[in-house]
Structures are given as structure tokens and as C-alpha cells.
Amino acid sequence: MGKIILRLDRVMADRKMSLNELSEKVGVSNVNLSKIKTGKISAIRFSTLEAICDTLKCQPGDILEFDPDAVSDHTEE
Image 1 (spheres, rainbow, N blue to C red):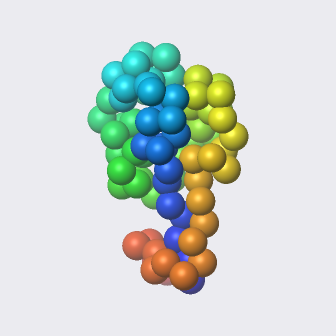
Image 2 (cartoon, helix red, strand yellow):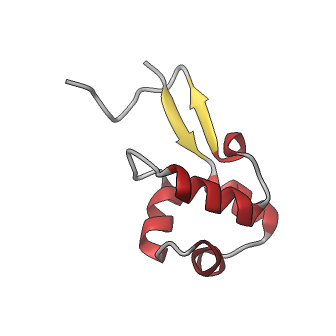
Image 3 (cartoon, rainbow, N blue to C red):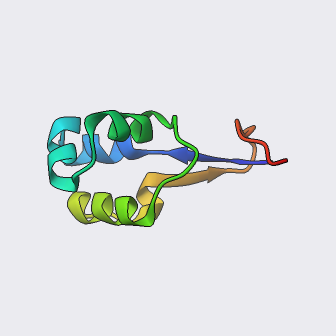
């Protein structure tokens, strides 16, 4: 089974935007954005994804990538 990989760090670097600046503009805490940036989350609200995409002027596909060969950290029971 594949895995969703978060590329927020790459998009932020392309836009030259810091975590603090994105946090202020999106209205999400630094801690939560840092978890998104490092991929240490199992879900993201559409409202948060929309705010990030609006602020960074990007598409969700710029932030989310599916790797069919990667092993997922999450298992469903």
C-alpha cells in the first residue's frame, strides 16, 4: 500500500515563506503547521488545506503527493 507524502516544506521554500509567516496568515499554530510540514499527521482539515493553498497560491497537489511504492505508517483495523 502506498503513502501520502507532504511537500509543504518545498512549497514554502519556493515561496520564500517562513513557518511563522504562514502560521500568522493561515491562522494555524506553529506547532500544528510544523507537524504538517514534517508529515507527522494522519489527517488534515479541508479548511486548513484551503487556507494554506490560498496563502501560498498553490494547488493541493503541490503539497500532497502519493507514492505507491512507499510503506504507510498508518494501518486500518
